[in-house]
Image (cartoon, rainbow, N blue to C red; front, side, top):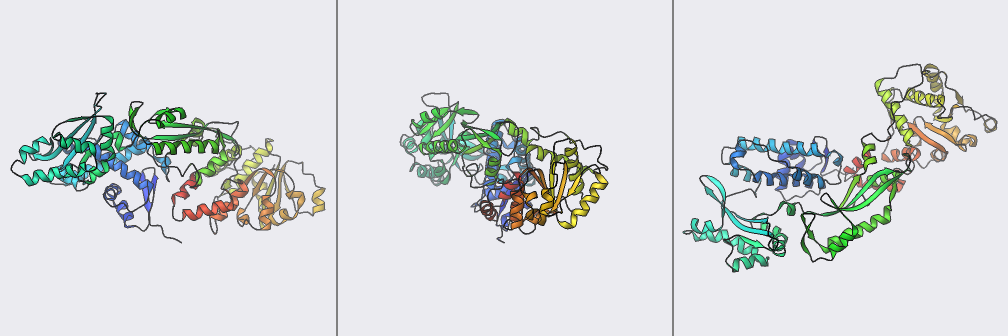
Length: 591
């Protein structure tokens, strides 16, 4: 088996990691310090979930930099505004455990960063700035140049630009206008030149910066047009690489983007079954605003640069807009206005599906689907077991019966996988006996190993004596003469069922397999014969649904919910990818 170098997934109270990489131990030793140290490393791990955590660390640092050092000493709360929180949530990746990430999760992670921050500050004996620069190399430090780009109310020049540097004033690191350096370093040309040299270097790729230098305006505040500000922002990575701190508007850091949004399951066509059609709504989103295709086409006509859209700045990138339009038309062709519930589940588990393979695609659950996930949709009330049931179910067995009823009501074929001795037979007798008694089931085919026929009859006598069970141990001729219109459970063996057409050519309300691992090998004649029997629904019982590999599970689910896990070949490919990308297992679990 291939060893996993590194994998990360989100959990209810943070994240978890596994693998052989040395980073795994560092993350486990200190989950927050591990993120910060990795953020400052060469980032050799290819993990979207980890990148998301690093972005939170960067966002946290940005907020820390806004706080005066005296307040940091007082251990005040680092502000987590709604804007900051929504920025984090809007960038949630489609990753294992991402379903746990919500407002509470973000608040919890933010609190962990705060606790780490103040634990670190309180242990350090020197200045706070020196302490934090040990962990955040780009934190305020003396004799460093900073660019500040801010928005103004001037329509012609909507951006202001100022260059500052950090220096020590009264034993504290302070930002001062660059002009102050002329006085501070009037007798130290080397220091002044070192400070200015980074600005000169950065101007080599930025025309507006070169123009500011030539006009002798680097020591003064400057007002910039949209295009001039855009030039600076486009070169922000290079400017930072020159050793200059660049404090640009927060919306550029988070890169306000236009996303294609797919809302699945706002409504559902009639009742829920695997073939029920979930509504699919396609739209573009920018922040909390919606855009039409027509509006996107109009944006494509504009010159590349910045444009204010819904009171927020957005970058016009023609190539990106083309990709968004192509994705939109691809989705229209893929979904139209609806998708079957089964197909949606299949696409969720497949890493190569259009839902999982597009970076700028935001998947949202509509009202009905959200309620369903929260068990508020069509989930059934507590199932009332017949008074003819002679026995008392344990708490977990009651939950099992209710779950079986929910699954059957919704049209799913459940797998009851309690361990041996925990009462799978009793649960089946309770629900099947009640449903037959109420007239909601007529003929049920129960297929068992030959050694268990007697046990079923014995358990029926003990717990559901009013339930009729007919043992199909007859010849084909005798079966042809048998009255199958009687309500009850018809019990037979795996071998008998595959040989008797009077059984396998008949339509059944429900088929139940006991010791269902008997059909784990999808290629045998016996398995193929049993899967070919027609029925409204199917249930399997097995304490060991996986004996050799996950392909066992595929064969069992191919019987209970044909097509849910895709074809055998498709599922096999997904499992091969899961060896190196373990979050795929989480997608399979969540589907």
